[in-house]
Each structure stands twice: as structure tokens, then as C-alpha cells.
Image (cartoon, rainbow, N blue to C red):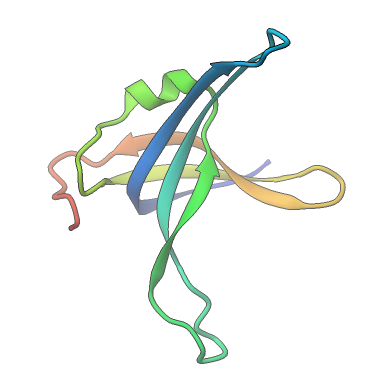
Length: 102
């Protein structure tokens, strides 16, 4: 398992919980986390919000929902399906007494 924990700014989140016409239930929590743009070539700078999957819809209720987002220690895992790899969120621990970023 390739996992690591990093302090990040969570800009927002979306709770998905719906049932298809065929009766199959879909659930997820998606987090939008500030991620640095690749400035190595000199043609971009700053931050953008990247989407990360964090388990089922119940995780949404485990985190605060301030308008400006919040700081958290997030544990990520690098996963591979045989063709592509991606980072998923394993755990989110909001940092107490952090101020939301505007």
C-alpha cells in the first residue's frame, strides 16, 4: 500500500447518493482539494481544485462544511487498476482552530 498523509486545504465536497432506474444504488463523497499546478515549464502557476474520491456518501457528514473550506490532514493512497493510477482519499482529519481560506 502506497499511502501518505498531507495537510491540505479542502475547498469543498459533494455527497452523491442516488439510485438508477435499474435499482442500483450509487454512493460517494467527492472532495475538492487545492492542488498546485505544474509550474516546471513556466506556463502555469497557482492552485486549482482537484477532485478526489473518499468512500461512500456517509463520509460527507463526518467533515465540517464552512463556506471557505477547511484545513485537514488527509491520508491519500495511490491505486492502480492495471492501466491507470489515481489518488484516493482514505481518511480526513480536520485541523481544529484553523481559519477558513477565502
